[in-house]
Structures are given as structure tokens and as C-alpha cells.
Image 1 (cartoon, one colour):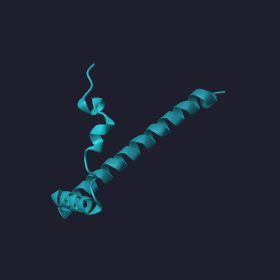
Image 2 (image 1 turned 135 degrees about the horizontal axis):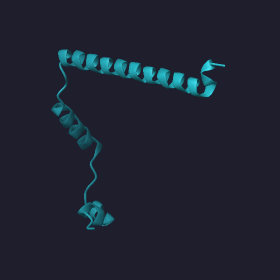
Image 3 (image 1 turned 120 degrees about the horizontal axis):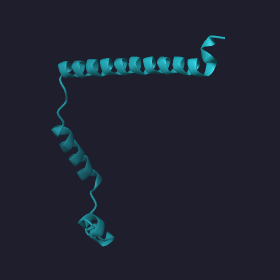
Length: 83
């Protein structure tokens, strides 16, 4: 199995690169944030509703499964109450 250059590289390779100063770092962060595409209000509301419906559906599904398995376990371990 061959290793990539990142794995085979030595620590001396990283020492050759100059460190980025705080001002340069800040400018780079601002430049990257300018590239971000923020959703419109309509998209935000749509995404919120989709997530809300999905979470409510999953809560109902898990609750029903919990109730069903709980009843099943009660029937199995309690003997069903036929005595």
C-alpha cells in the first residue's frame, strides 16, 4: 500500500512555510465569508418547515415503536393476565 505525500512528508516540510499573521488570517476569513450564499427568507421558512415536519414524524414513529415494543414486552413477561 502506497502512502500519499501528506503521510510520507517530514515535519521539516511544514517548517519551510511562513506562519500566517492575525491580520492576514482575518482578511482571509472575511474573503471566505463573502463567498457564502445565505438563504432567502422563503428558503429559510421552507427548510424550517421541512425539518420540523421530519422531526415530528420521527418523534411519532419512535413513540409508536416504543409503545408497541413496551406492550409486547409486557405481554411476554407478565404472561398476558390470562390466569
